[in-house]
Length: 171
Image (cartoon, rainbow, N blue to C red; front, side):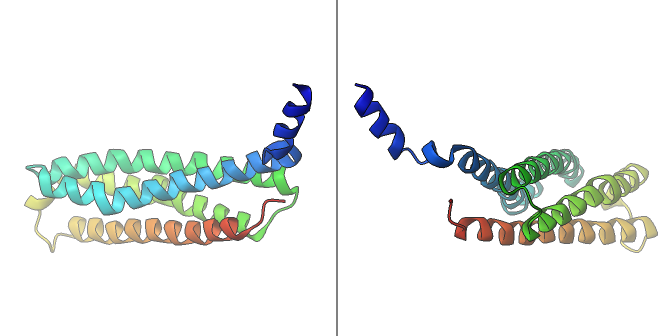
């Protein structure tokens, strides 16, 4: 029985490199959750809310709340990724710099852009009732474009990092 057990254990991918394999798995998982959330949010959830809910204000409130959740998922994913990367390689890789950039963009979006948008939304009460030329609405639309651009940048950087990880052999 011990002989078979030893042979089975030797065939497991984590037998010789268990910790590095686990850390690499956690790095990939953190990116997959973060990037999958961004794709789902932008391609499925937000468009569905604005097309189904009776008032755009309602859709905007749900989007605001869920975007904050998505940002927190990104923050946690970045911390997990960076911790695992440093533990696995004991050096700082260029991909870690990209994840730091992703984290920075997410923090700017959450604590800068989103907060300013929420303040403007509260001030306007119902955005659709405010004239498109109103400075508050103009600023809100500008911030919305910035927010969208930040999420797209995070997604693009994350895809580059994921690509490099997927091409890397697990040693």
